[in-house]
Image 1: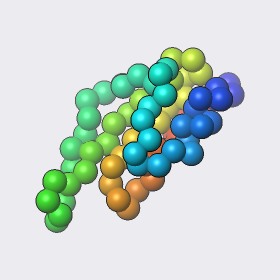
Image 2: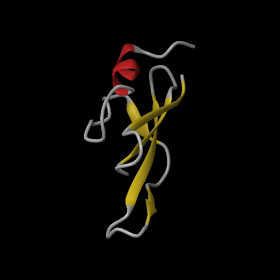
Image 3: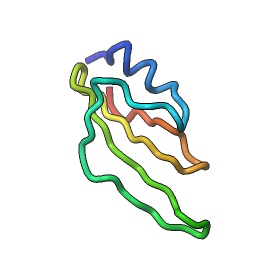
Image 4: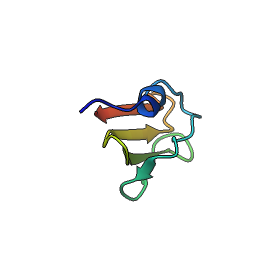
Length: 70
C-alpha cells in the first residue's frame, strides 16, 4: 500500500514537527535516560488513513521522524 501525502510530508519533518491529524499514538512513550540530564523520549504512531508507522524521537543524534512501514 502506498503512503498518503500527509505521511510523505511527515517523513520530512524535523524533531519539532508535530504529527499530522491522522497519526494516532500506538503505545506508551518510551523514556531513555543517558549521560545528559533528562535523556530522551520516543513515541510510535500509526496513520489511520494508510497504516504507515512512524517513530518520533527527541534525541539530538536521531532523526525526528522515522518511517518504518508504508
